[in-house]
Image 1: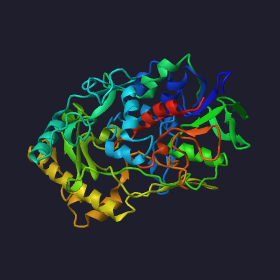
Image 2: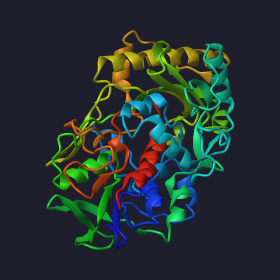
Image 3: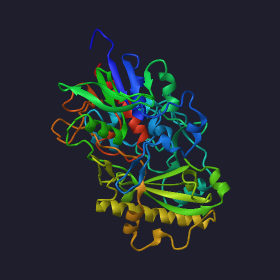
Length: 465
């Protein structure tokens, strides 16, 4: 595209979209199309500290079982409304992604994105990126949980993002002054004046003619009609639900679109505690990561947090001990039907997932007993996790950890189910890319936000301008 400044339209101002924009803003004419609001810069206090948001900041997705699937409808995407959990994944997560996406390929982007306040001088961390990483002072329940884990033989893990780390330690979290530090707070301020942001603007489809993306059909805020925003390159960064919807609406008929959906299922073991003790560290305190049977690939997360913080109908003194299955085999799908978008998460469809999550609950139950023995929490009578039919119990109680990935996954040319190639180009359509969690060929054994930001940063290196 020599001789002119290329026009790039990015659909989605979330974790990946803003990182991509940041990487190319000085060599392209970039327009970002975002369906949600722009809260402005600096990010307002409620976007930094609130945990319950109005429905207007959620895309309103529901699973086929009617379960809400929260996705941030706001600049910064889900990084503006999540819990800022900053576990990024291990070498064994990325190496199976293959050529161009191994740990060695992805680590430079992970480092470039972060400023790690405790471990920034380590060669596997960054010290000058826009996303500030830190570990918060634990509260009393975190201290009791940590002591229980150590007593049970789990090793200490002061840095959960160190290569090979497993064990008990503080949550890595992207926060500044304990406020949520996603791409709205960390990246968007530096983009203002360098890109065009069209907030509260609906993207309907990518306009494709003669096998090439020509632009995006959209409706801007306050307008009733549509117009086409021309582009030399269109990048879909609308997330694991929004991107396949747009591909389908645009007539991209590839067998992998909407397939291979993965998500981390989790269950809660709830106990009661003094509300004042919970309030000292309601979230982002301690985290146990363990490999079932000693296999680090079979990872389980266990950690306590305030149930009331996310659901005000729960008692103020209720603390949830979450158990997350981080290496699920089960897969679901997203289908666009005349009745709407049907999202089947596929949780625990595979027997091995049911067994593994049940085993994770047994580990958590033992730890909870140890914590309760100190008197800091009280376990309810006849708790569900002591039932004989534990596998059935976890199937009935499994919820979403809200980490959907894989619905437009990357792969090799000989993989008929791959939607994008290793440079994130949509197969069969020139000038069209995908850069978000939907391209992950397999879910990371970690909270997916930092890996999604990494994909955006990698896309800035891969885009052909």
